[in-house]
Length: 430
Picture (cartoon, rainbow, N blue to C red):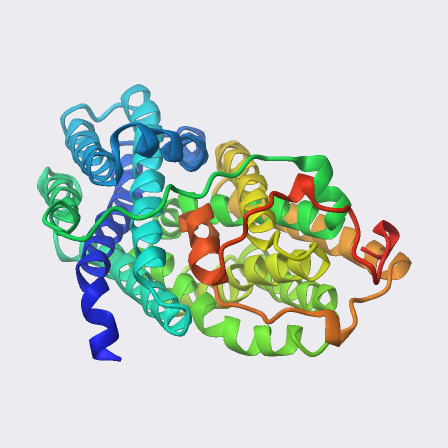
C-alpha cells in the first residue's frame, strides 16, 4: 500500500496543507469577529458568502482550468486565498470580510477540485477506493488540526492570519514542483432541478434542508460556544468534535442503510439530530462537557445524512449517471448552505444564541415530515437494486470531483440525457 501511495503523496500533502489552512480560517473568522463585536447576522453572512463562492468555484473552475491548465489555476487559487486571509487581518470590518470570504470559498473549491482530479487520474481502478479513503482521512485530520490550532495562541492579533497565509502558500508547492502530466479536464456539472426531482424528490428536499442545517452550524457553532461561555480550547472542540463524530457514525449508519429502506435510516438519523437540537434548547447547557457531548451527538447525526441522501438518489439514478446526480445534489446542498447561515444569524440576533438550534430544528422537522410522507406513498428500493453506501467527506468541502474520485469508473452521459426512469420503477416509486 505504501508503494501505491508514493505517486500521490505530494498531492495528499498539498491537500493537507490547504485543508489545514481552510479549517483554521473558517473557525478563526467567527471567533475573532465575535470578539470584535460583530453581530450574529453579519457573522452568518460570512457563511453565506463562503457558500456562494464555493458553488461558483465548483461551476467555474473547470472553465478556468481549460484556459490556463491545472498547475497555474491551482497556484492562482492558493495565492489568492493567502492574499485574502492577510487582507482580512489588515481590515477587520464586516463589509470587508463578507465579500472576501466569498473569494475564499471560490479559491478553496477550485483548489480542492484540482487536487481531487489529479488523485483520480493517478489512481488505478483497484486502488481508487483506498486512495479516496486515505484522502478523506487526511482531510478530516487536517481540518481538525487547523481548527484546534487556534487554541494555541491569541486570536485577537495577527498571528493566526499570518499562519493561515503561510499554509495556503505552502499548499501550492507540491503541485508546482510535480513532474507528472496534467490530468484530464475537471468534471463539469450543471444544476437541473427538474431532472433531480424526477430522480428522487426525497434526495432534493433533504439535501437542501441539511444544507441549511449543516452550514448554519458550521458557520455559527463557534459563536454559539463563545456566547455559552466556553473557553477557546472548548470552542475549537465544539467545532471539531462533531465532524469527527460524523465520520465515525457513517460506518454503522451506512451499514444499516444498505440493509433497509434508506429513507427510514435518514428519518432515524434526523431524529437523533432533533434530540440534540432539543437538548441545546431545553437544557441550555453552560458547562463544557454537556455542550461537547450534545455537539458530538449532533455531529454524528448531521454529518452522516449527506451520504445517505446521495446513496438513496443513486439507487434511483439511471446507469452511468451517479457522478452527475451527486454533483447536482452538491449544488442543491450549496443553495441550502447559502440560506442557512444568514437565517440562523438573524435568529441569533433576534432571540439569542439558541436561535442557531431553532433554525436547525425547523430544517430537521420539515425533513422528517416530508420523508415520512414519501415513505407512505412510494415503496422502498429493493435490496438487489441498491448500490453500496460510501463514506463521504463533509458536504461543505465536497466538490463534483469528489464524486468522480469516489465513484470509480468515468461516467460520460449527463443525467438529463438519460431515461427518466429505470426499468424496475416509475417516478411515483421515488
